[in-house]
Length: 371
Image (cartoon, rainbow, N blue to C red):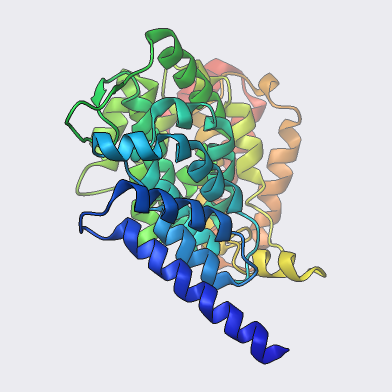
């Protein structure tokens, strides 16, 4: 029985590899054959063998409608392709499936009709941002998020054909009212992920650059002069000072999507203060959490800086916080943190925070300027 099962799996791997190759190759293929390949990969993409799922996702990432003949054959599969890639994200954490699904999502979004993507915008964003704090998928997830920001920013532009093709393809355009509504929805959705991106902007390696790129593209969506200045001065500049960047970000005005959310950002930032012992019972939760960055000392130190700036530079009134004393207590606990880096950051911030939360708005602003 084991031999039969192994033989069947080998045949499925071979078949899925063949279909995937037809979609990603640069060679000219008959549209009908491409349609068959897409249909087969959709059928196989949830196969119990991880390798098969990865091959299917890599194949579906090559989905495009860059000629009239391809469009006529494939436009009816655009929605199933997006659903297949989107829905598999987060299914399991024991392989590279999530990483390949995020890569596939990044690649297919520009190739799909705009209405196909906008109709599932909420689901897509909610699928992406939980991976910002995972070691293996963080940079890929942020690149995917940046792609979504670019998609939303360019939503009002007329695209001749899907994927940039020509030859009589129908224009991919949506009306101005829907563009505005989609951008409003997107700005509301990204509030849940903004704190994580701000923290990872001072991270290490690929994650750092991916976070900055995602923030740069996101700030363009807000269409705010101050955020444009922050983007050009810090995120797209050769030199980057994290403390100055956070201060300038917190000075944003005329952008209620951010200013109204500052108390919530403070609360979210404080969730990164805690050091979490990695003890779980369920296998999938273990695999998920072992690669999570929650409790990471680098992010804890960054969170201290972010929360401090949000309070001293951005918060309009201490009355906007549910429990100002809770912030001071949480900061005091970090003075005994296991990381010297976090201890130093907390020691340099706790005085400012306690004074600001005990002062009036005028006193707080003068303190902010002095520091």
